[in-house]
Image (cartoon, rainbow, N blue to C red):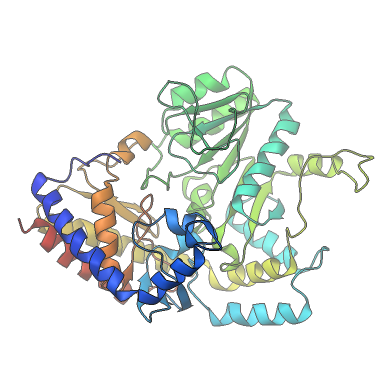
Length: 457
């Protein structure tokens, strides 16, 4: 990340000073976490069971003891009001009593059956109500939901290509971990990926004309797009962008796949409902089962008929689309998702967290005005965040210019030392279903004190 233009040299000097002090204070508060990480290095790379647990943070790794409602507590006894919400995986909150009840009841009947359980029907109905698509399939993650959606698109169209948009994130799959909107060819977003997949194109978000040019070549099986970019701050679509994509896909015989992995928690029905878009497929996962691993994708009746026709058998005598997995649609994830979607993530609950998101965004902008900072707040339903410029970004390039590492890392450790767990660098604070107005006000109170220090040069 480069230095954001919304910070002066005085702000940066203050942030560097604050960061040194707060880093030392953080380490002093977490001796047991530090000791556990030291022990863990003998058994796990970076001392963590998966790389994100270390790579997403510049502070030492916290080891968590338990969570309840909107907060979690580390092994040193420090509690944190969580505005990262597990990057949408814990947006319901921690240890919800209804979810705990469902887990216990399903565990008594069996968590994995390798055959359907009736809860799957309830989950399909809830997803249909949100996104309009009549047919659904399930995986263990949104990443795998995207992988399967692209395989279906290739079979349906007889094409290989995929169109993506810079700033996206669609999971840890080979087809999507590439960038190329700068015009210098495809560049991998991680090592170990080998060569780029054939027919892949990446253009800037909101550049409808560039997208049309790619689709007019007739080689794309699918356009895979987030209705709102949420992994480089928040970038809203221009009014004509999503409708224009829908029209261009229809004209070129390309399937439109909308990735709702994050946006489904911003408002009821996600970007599909908010912008009135009719995709051919929808993908998602994250927290729809309350933190129990799950992925899902919806299809039109026509695509579902193709999946039905292309069913492979166990012996390989009939070769079908490469779909499925042993633990996909397990009984536990289906039972949890049915309860969460039908009982807990209701339209009224979304309306409430949307109001909390607006309260959070309004408070960020008010704090900026108070400190004479020409900043804006990102906002989309329950989602907020920091735009260190007077104008909101229109694409990933503009959004990345506001992701200032010094500001983000200093803010996060400052908040953590005061009992607030802020969002990861690519995101922003998000109101969850367990939060209340007092929690948002607590966040904003810490922000006010933080900006006092940053601006007192």
